Image (tube, rainbow over all chains, first blue to last red; front, side, top):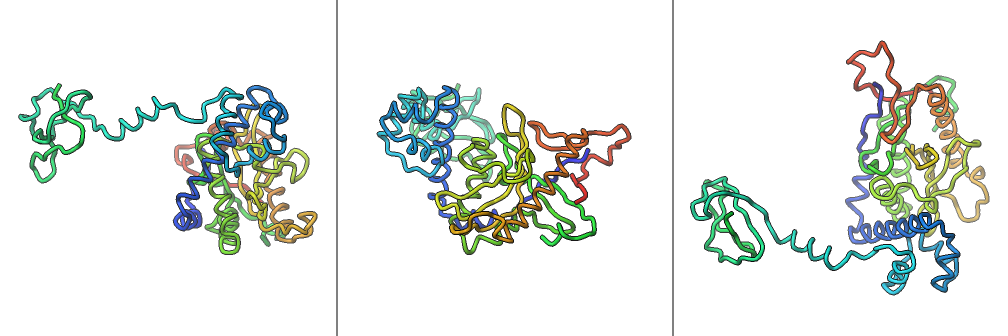
Length: 156
Length: 186
């Protein structure tokens, strides 16, 4: 079958390397916000004027929001969420889950921790703190290394 | 760009752009003849010194379009070619200094693929793109490519769907044909 080859652009790579990553991320998030508002308006079959009326702003302002360059205030984002019935901000619960996932490392084993052999996986679970005297089996240098996360280890 | 005015027939190859083609919309560009750069590569190379911020904006926008949101109507201008050929242009915000032409294929529900061509700078005091030879050439080249692709699609040779673009399989196709590039005659 004839299908397009995949092409990697050396110029895109060059451009991305010289971009300020914070500005690039910021601009992408503005575009995503604009898309969320556009999609919500479309789903509700609302014209921009409808949202403008509900928020007491000019329709041209709503148009500007959907272009992806607007620097929103938290106040207006909150109002948009409420009026359109969408979630722009993550819930605190979601935030906590993501934060937890970043600090937890998950391993599993059926062996007691201190007898775990190199290469054995060890389960780290919530709610039980243990000190760094516990060790996690791994294969670095053929030696069992201390497990030093702020969390704890429990062998299941 | 001289290629569109050449009498000799050249191959054009459609390639998928690794950086921006994604789950939301497949994004392609075109290689003409023996070149190793796409029309999109040339556009970037021609403008990245003079219009650094504008080029950054377009590169980031295409990544978001391909991977996150799909094409949104506020981000491009339609009806820039022959009637119904899907030639549009993407612009940078907020200044709208650059135009990047593309062909848009879709169905009633959503955009399926876009094929990036070239483009250039549109000065604020210019009324129409025809006043700027570079933009005029890029626009007419993409119109020509759009005509070729529409013809192939209408005849059933070219398939465009949510999985992107590919030629329809033929009965006498062997396994050796599996990785053939997607080419047309310009």
